[in-house]
Image 1 (cartoon, rainbow, N blue to C red):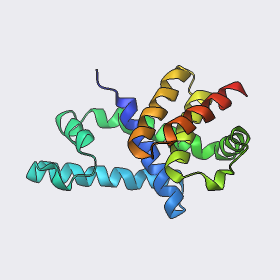
Image 2: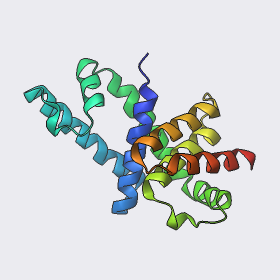
Image 3: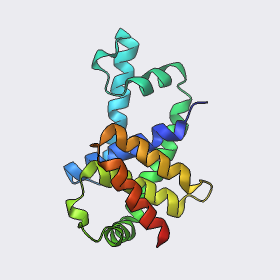
Image 4: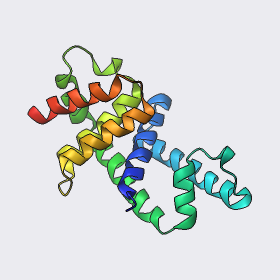
Length: 162
């Protein structure tokens, strides 16, 4: 089974991460990520070589199944738009969950992962919160340092309790 929402989450996290670094909207950050994916698809189509491709697994999947792009993009956009619209609430809640560290001191990759997980837990009604927590922890293992998965787990547990 192909987990299209998994790819959507990764792209939303990448977009949020870019927006935090470049100080642009989350939607603009996601647009930048999709520009990269379209470039990756062109490279893959022309050369069929993964060496210059930034999202190799996703690029190969989308090359074989271009119809998946609609679903992946739609959910990634739903996430980034929802997070953008609820940014103040989510950041304030995150601040309450970690009494030892201010939101401004949280690594951007961890912050992006947390925002996606918190949004899904609070606002995506047809999703079991455990799925979102597990995804956040697994994504943190790939995109963050070794301590981040435990930190994210603790914050999400705190978030669930409040």
